[in-house]
Image (tube, rainbow, N blue to C red):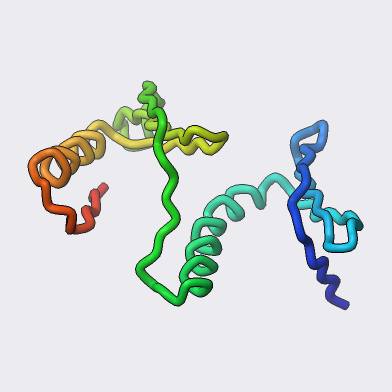
Length: 138
């Protein structure tokens, strides 16, 4: 039988002492508590899925398929990464909001160059507010 907890708030999370699982603690409308425990191996799946869930929710709530969730970037960092299996040096580009949200991408120098060029071409070189999406090819 399927158990559904109608949570009102995500209260806390706990990581197991061995780092093999994580528990999400919730509170329901009556003040009761519940938890969802997942193996750590599910966290990347959750991270990859959450942006799509948020986008679908936003678009359905407002009945507007053009909406996107955006976060103000406060800082970024660039660190030297490892050499990948193809012998290409990777760099770690980290973007951080003013809050606790931070995400890092491993990317070769060619992608960083393409990103810098896209910024120059699309943002700095034009005052046009209707920019075309840019896809950086790997």
